[in-house]
Amino acid sequence: MKLKPYISTLVCIVIIASCGDEPKPQNQEQQMEKKAVVYQVFTRLFGNTNTANKPWGTIEENGVGKFADFSDRALSEIKDLGITHIWYTGVPHHALINDYSSYGISNDDPDVVKGRAGSPYAVKDYYNVNPDLALDPDKRLGEFKELVARTHAAGMKVIIDIVPNHVARDYHGLTNPKGVSDFGASDDTSKEYDVNNNFYYIPNTAFSVPEWQNGYQPLGGEPNGLADGRFREYPAKWTGNGSRLAQPHFNDWYETVKVNYGVRPDGTKDFDELPEGMEDLGYLEHFNFWKDKTVPDSWLKFRDIVLYWLDFGVDGFRYDMAEMVPVEFWSFLNSNIKMKNPDAFLLAEVYNPQLYREYIHKGKMDYLYDKVELYDSIKHIMKGYGWTDHIPVVQKGMADIEHHMLHFLENHDEQRIASPEFAGNAQLGKPAMVVSATLSTSPTMIYFGQEVGEPGAEDAGFGKPSRTSIFDYIGVPHHQRWVNHKTFDGGLLGEEEKNLRDFYKRLLNFTISSKALMGTYQEIHFYNKEHTEGYDHRVLSYVRWKADEKLVIISNFDADKSYDLDLKIPAELISKWDLTQPEYLLKEELYGNVNPVLKIENGQGSVNLKLGPLESYILRVQE
Image 1 (cartoon, helix red, strand yellow):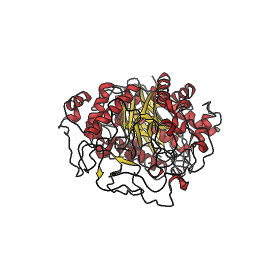
Image 2 (spheres, rainbow, N blue to C red):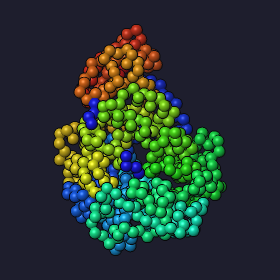
Image 3 (cartoon, helix red, strand yellow):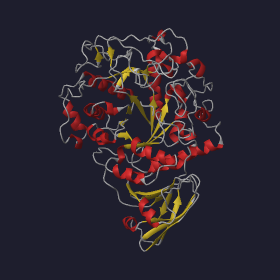
Image 4 (cartoon, rainbow, N blue to C red):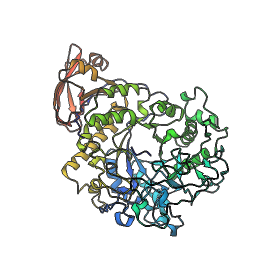
């Protein structure tokens, strides 16, 4: 949920042949045979063809996309991009500024809503979906169920958000299943804390909205009967980011309230902790550990929510700010999910590397964002001041959990590659994407519009340029050119945008078909720095192999400089790969532009390559 110049060129080369398999990663109960690729799409923005883009524009002025915009044609094109899973961001009903009172939905107060369209991470009803997304708000659940069915028919799986750390300040369920009460409905509000209270309270004190800063006014200052500088909440609750102030700061997550998981205000825990050794056990043992334990009420509420959506047909969840919720809860929740659907895709936002292994092994997460380590390293290289030397170090440090660390270059929290604040040129992301997509056995994620160079340049209102706003009704111009009035044929794209999308399509389809990318990794970067003339810290190389494929990846992160290299393949790898002939033809798989030769002399391999700016090769050893 956080809101978090010139870039160099990268060249990538991949060489493939045959080799033996590696063991499964530690504690991995079911490893995919091929890589997964997640397409994160901001659901409200995907099908919006309105180009007005008025700051603080209303839904009528700026438009909004619908579930129905994900037509069979649109989904087929997404699938053909090389996508296996779609993360539909912003599906659960969250607080927003639009009048749906005729449908029995309460109006939300602009004083506790960010933007006009609202944050998808301030959920006000977990058993329903955003009415903005429906052609008929009365039938919004049915329309989403049809989207799930269409997505499955197109050959992809569905992921939605779950935000366990916090909910909207005015949470109110309209379609709760029988016996399900709202968060906080049974709380003893006279107490700051009780193990079965869903929220933390500031007794005998009323909530006050923040003091607005930097000229900010709700709805951009537009008159609104509810935008009066007041929001009735008595007693006040702790705010979502943990603020215990009755009047949170403007930079706090003031639109949300923190959920209580049985952690006392002093940080001690009011529930059983996992015994030593549980990190080595699977979800069945975790499920059995919890099934006879008494757990806080909030645990049960979220268990019921995720099971509801699994019954609905959803295939997995992306968990917002997972590290702000105790790991024991994740052990409980995820083991319940896996008992119902062992193949469920569970992705979490965790930014503290010291917690990665705990949340994977104890919390039973499938995947975490590899943001602080890999993403930040690649971003620095793309911006021109990072060294590729850091990537092998990062990968070595992740060796035992590399499969669980999902790779990305964009998401809704991060700056768009093409924004001036990041790279300023989407082309500079091409080689970085090859590295991101081929370095590990982990899934790859791209953000909608990334594949056509979306720069996120709009001043949308609450959301500002460099990130496509998640708070406002807005159009996404480069993406809209691909949508082409809902024909989804890219007919309005320029040649550079078409070529960029073609690059992503070629690369991602290769990754989901390659066996080698689910196999062994070994860096050859430092060997080549020592033994290859002209090789430097703007170049990166490593190898991947499994069964009948072998990959050598070399990447040039310099934006202007070409490299003429006699890339070395160390003798130990030639021996492991059992390559005994003096020469092997290499077939280029991405574009077919080159077909170099792997030469072997005195046990060492070498490939003569010219790496042009932003050029990427995938080469297969022909045996």
